[in-house]
Image (tube, rainbow, N blue to C red):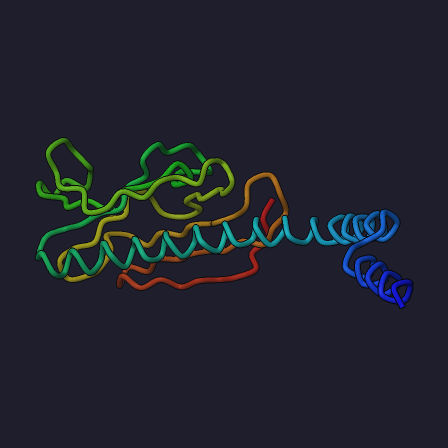
Length: 177
């Protein structure tokens, strides 16, 4: 009888763990899955950053327009460190244009400061001029078009077109160089 009890205990102890071969097979299967999934995950992350950038740009334009109508004074959006073709890539500011000159000068109120995208997104002006200024009526001083793309890849991007009436049009799936 004792032999049967010992045999039952050893069998249940073995059933609770993995053998070395089972562990090696599991690790191999997981490694193969990671090799297959990783490239598509990287593409998803890149496209997500581009989508986030265009969303922040559009929201900052809407903020500037609403602040201009609320305050009864011009409010603008200006690039922090403009570089040709990537004017807004390093970030931008929404500011109250107290002296109505269309330029951010010392002493003017900054409503919100948007940080850049650390080189992962290219956000440039393709038509019109920056800074973008909204009058108290909500109208922009000029029509401006922006292109938002992933930097150093062929991810599809966006075109954000700001009309003179202060509204934005978004075009998705724009080819990026």
